[in-house]
Amino acid sequence: MALDLERAEAHVSLKERRLRALSAARRISQRFRAQAIVRPSTMEVTGIEILSRNRLLFCSYPTMLREDIAALKAAARMARTGFYREVHCNVEILSLLSPDWLEVMGQTMTRGIVIEVVERNDMLMHGMWLERVIHVLSLIRIFGGKIAMDDVAYTDQSIHLIEMMRPEIVKVEDARHAPALRQHGDMEIIVERIETAQLAQEAVNLGVDYLQGYWCDVQVEKCVPSSLTPPGIEARTKGDWNKPKQPWAEVKELLAVG
Image (tube, rainbow, N blue to C red):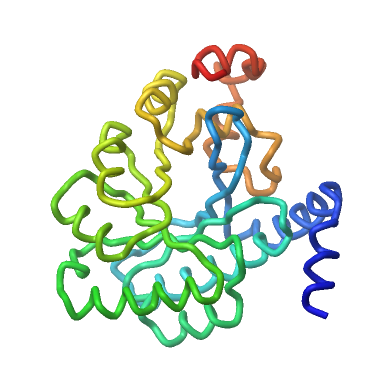
């Protein structure tokens, strides 16, 4: 029976998956927005990251736990549409270890969700916390999810965490770190904060796998439901930014892809 359901789902048309994604986006759009994750060789949107629309109080554990649980539920809703290969959401370390977050994870986790682990206070440099986190990461993978490390730089601390946590994905803001980081694990690398074509070109030259940032969002605006469009896109499409998008031929030339 399960195999029959999987086969039926595999044959769901692209149009149906798109309609599902639009419906899911409307349901989560009041609280969340999304940013595209793009394959530079084709400018295909392979995934999105679910982001809060509100300013977050990172120092408040109850606030962040509620937000992280809501983001996980939103990511699960989008992932189940099958429209994007992956849907990312963030989680703080303390939320990750919370019984409440773990319960929701067990209920909602599905293939296609990527949990981005956010490390703010060097908690993972303490063996007790790291051991607990690694255990939770193994549970996430059992339930079908993937792990990403967010805001990674080329430091001894980051290398240690990569080797211990073995993330499937590493996200960096400086593409220059990518070649060195690849020596410490078999993972895909996403470069964030791609604001210009020049930054995109530099990242491609360094062999990164995916791009993320406002420049990408402008190029692939129609590939993300308008209800989830980042506020920055609305601002950038006014005034000086209110001009036609670059044709794919020009984007292709800028990125020097085949």
